[in-house]
Length: 270
Image 1 (cartoon, rainbow, N blue to C red):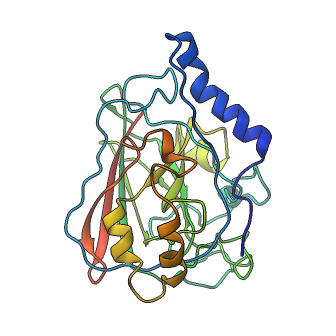
Image 2 (image 1 turned 45 degrees about the vertical axis):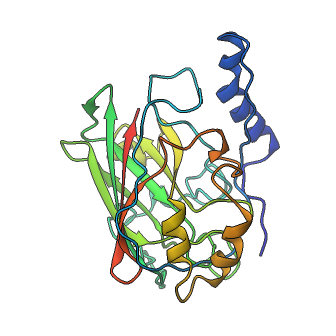
């Protein structure tokens, strides 16, 4: 199924101008970038050792923010944070580390290669203890729970976690699929506290993380990821509407394999 993967042209243009406007001011260097999040389909994944992707210095002038700060990105059309339809953040049970199953009366499990995801949040080198992350992504078929045909009654692959004293938090999930027009990715919003995430309040950051190409190819060669395997060759990190302007600060480091499962880590600089 194909669905427009964004909050609309107005939202995308405003985000684009915000990320690019300062470049003209800073010396006439004009960069063009694309913003968006597109339709949907599925995916699969094999064994691979440790693969790189941890943030180096600032990548693309994605905002006049602090050096190395992860860029702001669109939440896409399927956030379920109350900004575009349903609001999962106010539901009892959303604070959880294992997001593979649906909850709160919904029954269903997202099948796929196990993925442990660890994020470490820092601001000017200071761990953001007590900050919270709301994270969501598509299933291996490329569908988003609560929105996509066939899974509107599900709310899996969505959850909130609070950072520990080191600014670290984690989720147990599956390796996501991909669909036409988008590189394999995960959405997340950062909130000042767990209370503000579940109130909910306005997030301090909305962004996305990406996966290394070799991992995606290995994952999508496994059973259940056939739709993603078909979609991946049509997109690259350089042509993706979100990551084309620079992805160094958003590319997760991944270890493990398709048979044993993957672990992805990302240092998120604010």
